[in-house]
Length: 345
Image 1 (cartoon, rainbow, N blue to C red):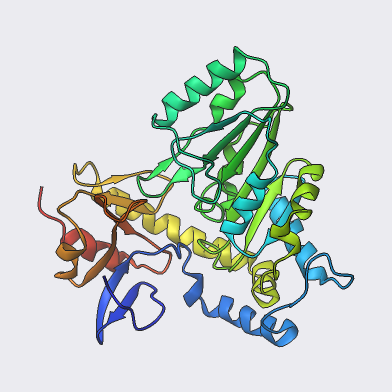
Image 2: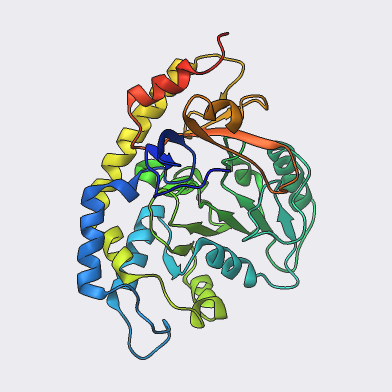
């Protein structure tokens, strides 16, 4: 366990000592972007830190609707609802599932959208089973499919083309917290690769705090009526909305996000090329996450003045998952330093 003295970027300070930092979820490094921080400061000057009013009040801030439209355009869905956090967004999404909806829950669902236990199958086996079960049965209301878009702990991006094989009307709820801003066309997340069939209703829920560095969450829906249902829940009506200063920064930071994303993708490709076909590193071409074996843990790297992500999840008593997480602030020199400290093949 490392106690950090400040918000880390490409490095972190621990006990007055500097370490290379390959952990956390600040994928685009926005928390250290001078241009982004300037926008945040300007947002504070215009709006202050908070807007202490319910979204259903008779006084509304037009910035919220503007942000929702930008997100809808990004993911190409008709309507978006802003919420205080990704966890709140996930809970609001599953809260509208009807009691008579049959739910097919994937092997990796974040607690925000989890209902009961996750499937014990692999994603591909679960997908095949789900298609077969739905196509061979009839349902009074549309079946609901629940899944995360990817698994950042195992460096997997899930393939949702199996949805093309389903003939009935379905509702698909996907948590894209680690995809939005990071993967897909211009950072559109998993939405870029989703089948767009008339029988599929999409509800995408996500945190804006990972890649985009905004303390907020959102739910984007293909049907406005579904978005309106979410707006009627207490997850929306009884909470303080996200900081308008941060949303101002988000709405005006499009070019900054794209520049940071381009840098991250360039450095990610460099690290993947350097790792090559090493047997002690697993990664996905679209993710800045690199999985190391059990012996290459935080203790190993800390002796090299490097901090990686190393903890057990979802049960703290389980086996540690060792990952190097790249962000847009890292330089080629940083990447080479990480490679140099790996055991020789």
